[in-house]
Amino acid sequence: MQPTTLVTSAILLIISIHQVVHVASEFLPEDSKLNTIELATKYKHPPLQFEVVTEDGYILALFRLPGRSKVPVLLVHGLGDSSDTWLLRGSTSLAITLADDGYDVWLANVRGNRYSRRHVHLNPDKDPAFWRYSFHEIGYYDLPAIIDTILKTTKAESLTYIGHSQGTTASYVLGSQRKEYNSKINVMISLAPVAYLHHTPPPISILIDLSPVIEQVFKDLSIHEVFGDNTTLGYVIHRLCPLPFIGYFVCTYSLAFPTAGYDPPELEPKFSQISSTHYPAGTSSRSIVHFLQVGYREKFAQYDYGSEGNVKHYNSTEPPVYRLDQVTMPVALLVGDNDNLSTVPDVELLKQQLANVVYYNLNPRLLCNHLDFVWGRHMSDYLYPQIYEVLDSYKHF
Ligand SMILES: *[C@@H]1O[C@H](CO)[C@@H](O)[C@H](O)[C@H]1NC(C)=O
Ligand SMILES: *[C@@H]1O[C@H](CO)[C@@H](O)[C@H](O)[C@H]1NC(C)=O
Ligand SMILES: *[C@@H]1O[C@H](CO)[C@@H](O)[C@H](O)[C@H]1NC(C)=O
Image 1 (cartoon, rainbow, N blue to C red):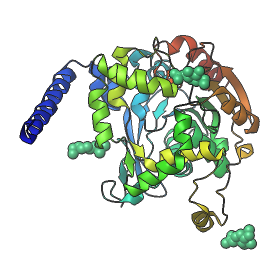
Image 2: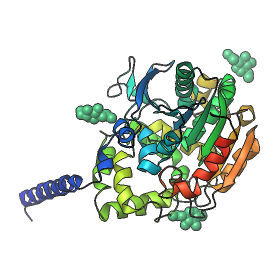
Image 3: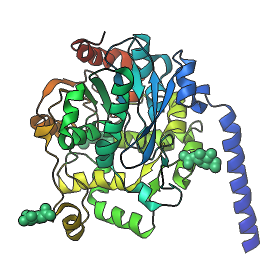
Image 4: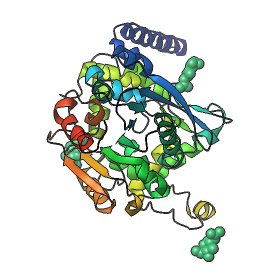
């Protein structure tokens, strides 16, 4: 084939893929296209929006679905996710279920995602410094600023915290690093808790083994933001994954299930069209590297800068380990047997070290995976009873 023919064919192919994606997007479910405010409003809880500025200058969007409970409930999403996640199951999603029952529901967005991609002086598009954070800074800076805003606004003395995945990791950082916050959380409900990653099976364990290489690649290619809406990867995922048949096969079947655990009945093709337009919502490459380090070093510790960098940052060649015995807030652990990210033995290690575990539940649904805790089709049958059991033992009204 002539080179020009090849180029012409390539261009035609790109144009036709573009057309297919464009036409397909016309047929997506309505909730694929709605943001947090629009989703909450559609399901009858029009939210208020707050702007939270952290001690280190990040500007975070915080949403409130007002309710009459005296104790507010804060929901904190996982890695690369956003407040949308708590609304994607519509009237049976956790945020709407709690709001329908009168809870005062608050939805966090941590630094770097599509709602919190702002800073008082750093420009996320130009300053790599904006992206130098991981779950450590989220726990150390974002959570205190968010919690203080909620307590100040509601005049409540404490709140209930419900976290998913990284949303749990950051809460353990908070409890161990800023001890005064333990008393501001009446109970911390951990959905798919993550502090250790030594027992994670492949394919994640392969990434963990490659952790030093992945870190170097990010460095060499100057990749700071990952999975953001306007990054190449984010752009491609949001357009290809919602495509009928092929999108489900590539994104959910071949990528999400091997990582999170296999559970097709709970994460069906039509819902994947909704979740994959909302997720991922953007994060930093360092956030991913820090989790990989946790698995690689088999320690729940601060970011590893290498011995020289560690001496500079921590005055020690090794990064300090998070003291889980100093996390004194009451913690409820809700675990999935088929969760291939947050595995049962890793949660067991966490449970042994936390100072105040008040509840532990291995989900009765044996196929329960990492994503079912936010996206499961029938969460209200197999997950909400446990969440309400914990909520009911702390006085909210
Ligand atoms: C992506 O780009 C669009 C158009 O420039 C902009 O409106 C939007 O805020 C950007 N989103 C993110 C998360 O960067
Ligand atoms: C999850 O991990 C288990 C145990 O290692 C493994 O048997 C199973 O195949 C994994 N699931 C998927 C979808 O890879
Ligand atoms: C650094 O660590 C050494 C030995 O552990 C200690 O003697 C020294 O005081 C520390 N320096 C600072 C600034 O904390």
